[in-house]
Structures are given as C-alpha cells and as structure tokens.
Image (cartoon, rainbow, N blue to C red):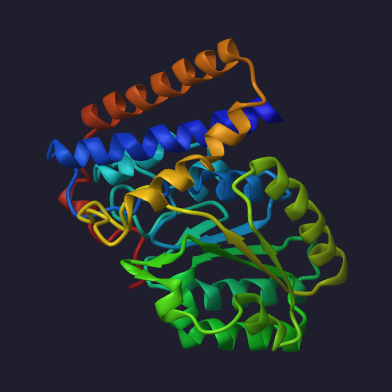
Length: 303
C-alpha cells in the first residue's frame, strides 16, 4: 500500500504542476484550483472507501478525482475542452462528473447534494456511504448547517470531510472562523474528529475506522483534516498574504516528504518516472483529440 499511496500522491502533484505550466503557456483557459500539498487527504480517504461508495467534491477536486478514478487521460482532455474528456469537454476544472464522482464549484453547495444522496442510499438499504469533500471556506455557508441538521436527524450514512488548508482564498481562518470547527458538527449531535497530519497512512487508517462505523450504524460523521495548500488559491494568486517562514514550515510537512522517507530512493525514482510518463502521455493524447462538434451542444442536457 505504501508504494501505491506514494504513486497516487505523486501523480496528483505532477498533474497539478503540469496544469499550471499549461496555463502559463496559454494552452489552457479559464481558471483552476490546484491541491498541491493536500494530496494525502485525497489518497488516504479514497483508498479507504469501498467500491461503490459515492464522492462529492468541490472546486479543488482534481486530487479527489485522480485518487478515486485514476483517469488522468480523461481529466486532462476535459481541462483542454476536448471531446475525449470525461464530460466531453463541458465541465472544465470545477464540475467534474464520472461514475460515482460528482463535483461542483459552488462553495459548500455539494454538501446538500451529498446529504440527499446519503438519504437515497439509506432508503435503498444499501451498504454504500457518501463522502463529501469541502474546504474551510464552506464553514461560512448556511447550506452546510442545513445539511448537517438533516443528516443527524435522519441518521444518514455520510462522512463530511473538511479539508482545512487555513485560507479561504486569501483570508486566514483566524479572521473568518469563530470557535471550534468540530464543535459546530457536535452541536447537531454528530460525532466529529480532527486530524492534524499530512501523513497519508494515518489518514487512511483513521478513515477506515470512521467509514466502518458509518456503514454499520448508518450515522453521519464530521472529519476535519488540517493540511496546507502549497500553491495559490487559483492560478492568478501570488500568495502575497502568506509569510515565507510559514510556507517553509509547511514544506517540511509535505505529504510526499513524509511518506517518501519510508521508501527506498530507487523505488521513488522509478515511481516518479512512471508518473511523469503518464502525465506527458495524457497531454499528448489530449492535444491530438478533437474538440466537441457543434451539433453535440444539446447532448447530455435535460430538455
């Protein structure tokens, strides 16, 4: 598992770095929100899920998507707006959808959708659970608390995963979040836990236990994972609101550094070559692919 975890995290890291490079070159348009530095959350959580479990994500969802689907070719093509993309070039970076993975760019918006999905699974008496990823910025959205209320009231099989990277765009949580994050969930009678780690193996083992409890008892759980984005909020963010000392301090807590210390150098080099090759191949395939035809504009829409 250790080598697999490292490979998945490195694949996400190299993908995000390549995306930023392609934007700089003018090959990609619009915007993107990278998860550089937060890879342990995506990998640790998704690898502890059961097949068939449902994921909802947010604007910073590339890592969640890659860790759960391994489809770098489809994602790269999607970001280039190509017909071979996972949504035929229609979703862009923030509204990814494939299989049991659903993302939307509205802050906190998918918490309500995820709660509805959890209700559906409970009514169907399935053993599937829902994992809803969102950031600390969602703590300022009322829909999150409406969702927590219903999940607690109806005892729904859902895990709310708050990735606290300490900044809502450029605003530090100390300026925008009052009190304890987990106490907000506890106020609804929801069991809550906070992890202060970028260690993917710790996150994995912790989530295994959480998911097992949610699945067996059909009850919600609220998990806060304190992490750090080593990049800007979006591609246009120069991070001038953070100190150099802060950034250097978190570099020492890089998830790849933590796990990499437990692997042989040759193993890491081999994995890096493999991941880099996959990313370059994805770029090449997407570059050669066609854009969607104009007569397909109404496909996949409700009419």
